[in-house]
Length: 380
Image (tube, rainbow, N blue to C red; front, side, top):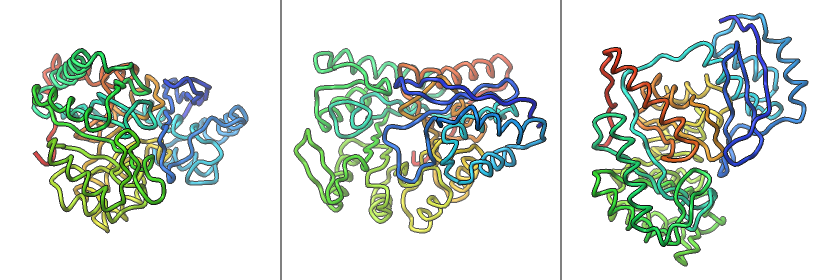
């Protein structure tokens, strides 16, 4: 594709922090950012010299012929580092805008929406566990899946209204309950609607270098005790999905939990959408799934290489939003193009942009007689 014009702009995200928007050939994309970012992620910031960088990139790129890989390589070459330490969030914003200009393919198999119902941790809330998640495993269509998640969210909010204090960064409910009480109450509502629960424990944020600390429950757990605790709640609440149950360098216990449970054990901070770190996890047998966040690795082509490596090795990719979001719908398009079985995209607030993208596409396909279907969920 010939790149006629590129532009970058300052914008704001859902936490009212500055971010980067970028246009390639008139197609606009935004860079998200994370609150609980892993140590090994690519750089994510708005550079002070953005206008100068824009002008220099225009000279380097405009008028040239590129595919996604060569465009991304030009960005990395200009930056001088794989982690985009100079241009920061400009990298993923420009890369996503190029992909949008080039065009996405649309698979007719849709992902299941993994909805964040209750939140805490670094995203704001009373619980140490960062996300209490719902997966509508019995849904037969994407509209039905959205309806199930919404019903559970509303019913939980109404049933426990005296203990609900509002919403956090991700549109998730904040409760006065501790972690286990929240899990107990949400489990009852989800079970009624045929949904399974998941957790993003975000253990990096609980780890003090020696123990995992759960302040509301008065617990400080060694890695061995953390393993026992997570196995207990997997069994007790029939969890389908557990993300980041240990800190970002603990490949060993991620492996043990994977081997000892029939659950989807998902690496986020462990892998940070990085092909090399995923390769290390595959070699060690750590996890059976990974979070995919394009800004973690800085460009789209690297994101796709990681997805492809995961699929080749029977690791389940879960494409995901960030806590500092925009109305950009790139991850929804990526989910359809790469046939990703699960999209983690919230339930309420700004994240409905991701859900609406898929909801509308489902209806467009139905009108066109393309027979959209829900994809296959693993481990069911």
